Length: 290
Ligand code: C2E
Ligand code: MG
Ligand code: MG
Ligand code: MG
Image 1: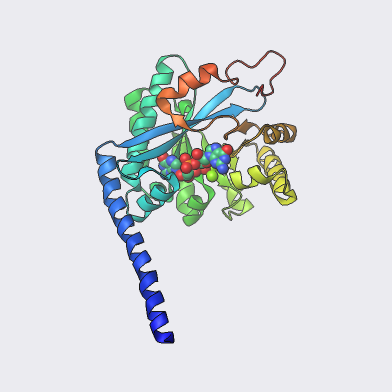
Image 2: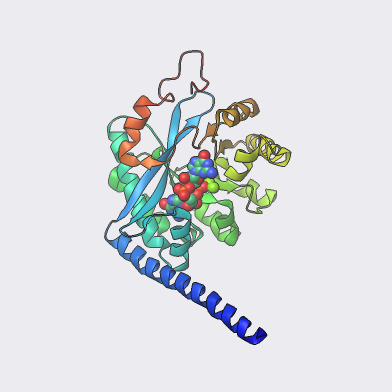
């Protein structure tokens, strides 16, 4: 009986596992064709200056609207793309879309830096730098208008190689952010060598900082560490006015999160901004009016 139970459990387990890997395989080949057939979408999430209460940039976030399965979670298909060696074509798509959007803003006199996320595999791509400098030339965009975000974990996959790529990116004149800062085990001596401009505190610390003393200490210390190193500090996951107020007290520079604005299709960004309280902060009162 025991053996039969084990066998049965195994079959059940194996069944789910097979279904799961079949779905993954299907998704991988569909992702390849979604990239080729331009079926991805570019969303943007605003970044707001905590000092002035004004929109000071946006982050480009890719979306995949699957014809049958609906919106696929971005974390899931980025992981899939990494697994399937599809990051490079995906990044190429995102870069093209981001430069096009950035140009559209620039052309209308809107100076709004747009940041693009890069993966560990992008950092190892020998053609990355040429591709990015080619895009700046094609669109005739000043380097301040496109920025790059690299997660602390991606940097740590190959610290020496990443440092070299970051140096090349900095030579192009762009701003660099360390993303998801605080969960990636980089050493302070490595951090100190990185040619980056800002730290983005991981949302897990930010969202819990009002209830969790440990998170509060991490956020506070990261703001100080960043400023002492001459870096800007961005808080991700700013979901409430309470968090905004606390971050303002701590002197954090920039906020990103649902309280400020959710990611939206890039085409809707201007409309969103025009009616958002962040576009015209009241004189002398730069705090959120929500
Ligand atoms: P990330 O770069 O840290 O981006 C921030 C993520 O936090 C986004 O998830 C965003 O939708 C989400 N978020 C925004 N506001 C809040 C909030 O108030 N609370 C919480 N809990 N979350 C918030 P998303 O868009 O699902 O992307 C997940 C991750 O996938 C990104 O994390 C980034 O690492 C990666 N990713 C997204 N787009 C791209 C891309 O074009 N290329 C690459 N390589 N990676 C990308
Ligand atoms: Mg990011
Ligand atoms: Mg992040
Ligand atoms: Mg994050």
